Length: 315
Ligand SMILES: [Zn+2]
Image (cartoon, rainbow, N blue to C red; front, top):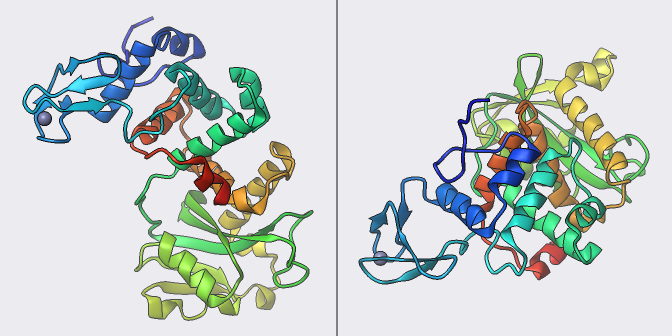
């Protein structure tokens, strides 16, 4: 087989676990990969801006700027900063998370990595989920369907009735041909126009065409700069999934995923992070190569500040 990819000489991701295992067999190999992802054009000193194609490494993990003599930690400003575990274990976690078709559970991660405790595994999963959402990511554009779904019980509930014990998740899905394009999911406190408009403004580019049902919480979108198309489901007599097939597809996949891998055992306070994982996977569902998902998550992990545990727990 043609040898075309290698972390140290620049390109890009392992295709199989065997390749992964070969590439990242040492801490230095993992560090080299992080360096390439962070500074593809050569190390840039954050103090003076000097670029070094081949920077001088001090002790492991520190670059020395030849100009200003400042030392820079390779992992500072990344998810891996100040970790007490080997980088290889983190890389394995990322491989594991991205190679599970329906997402990883903390128990699964604990087993695969031999982590000491369930809490550690849980903490790691949540750190990785943070990396799944790029800060300042683009908003959805074009024509977008928007609806809400209720999580935390059996089946779909009718809006406003018996839904008090459930968590409301707003869904936006781009219309791309017959299927959905990219999606965004977010917990909303209620289905008031204040909450729903907030969700739409945060996740959809003004000027886009927003398609919703006739719920009053969606009225007034025109004044926020959107084109608003209302599908009057009750008047037409057709079931909702006929008019809004994309958000309903997403809602049913979300339901299945929730009840499957996680057995519905997610506290609402953690749900945001799980939604991020779902979105990360969904928006990259056409990436056939599992290695590519690994690569994307690695890219985002090196551009992601570490998250203190108290922030994760507190939401
Ligand atoms: Zn410098």
